Length: 336
Image 1: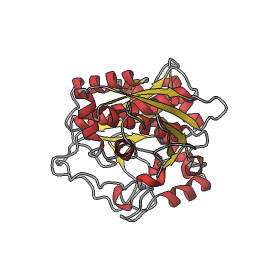
Image 2: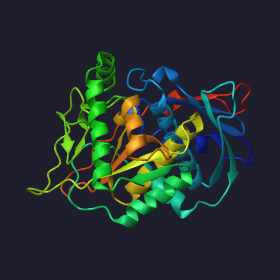
Image 3: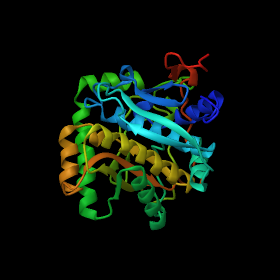
């Protein structure tokens, strides 16, 4: 970097926060290339889940979340990220080029950056407390600002169509041996693992929270969240969608996922992205037709609610060392 842009240490600090972004099975399928005046986000296809994510949609969503995390982190550090998405048509793995300019941190930048280290994927049961409409509205607005639609599924019949699609996708993947092998390879990790899903982050058996079937994992030790006797799980379901289904639309949906999840975390809500129903072509089509009336393309489902008062935070999933995710463009003056 030069005198008009942050020093390398500041950039690496921002990337460390960006690497905290959620990704499918914590694969972290991205890498960063630094130039003297720019940061480049690259897809890392070696970390793609070919059975779980045959279209590469989860990979793009994950990379979009990392891009938004980077923008938020840089904003809190006093730098505006000017993003050029898919800047090189000949290289579809070159997802974004980011230029930087000084700017005063906004309150939103600071609060969302502060939520990065606190955000967790919580696969446990939520409490019976409803999420205030104002909280959902703020998530919707910030997702829209990031470039995608976030649609709360509030109608009883529409929600039933959504949960049926989730059930159908789970059943389809359960009968796919390649999916099972891939799931076993990326889950059940020990507490020192730097990627993959920790055993301590998944429940010991199949979970159905209210009307919502959660993804089943081969092994897990996550304790149940104790709720009051007879309490119903009041988790809300929101569909993250876009008017397009192209690479940029999916990437921006990932950015909106990050905006929504960080907003929810800042508001004290528990969250869990649900991608399973969008990983199967048939159920993705059902959600588009029966939940979104074909007005948009669905890319992810978010489950949001209040964790029970007595429930401790879910364990933190570790990330790869920043140095393992960063490279330098040829001729960069500040490369190590």
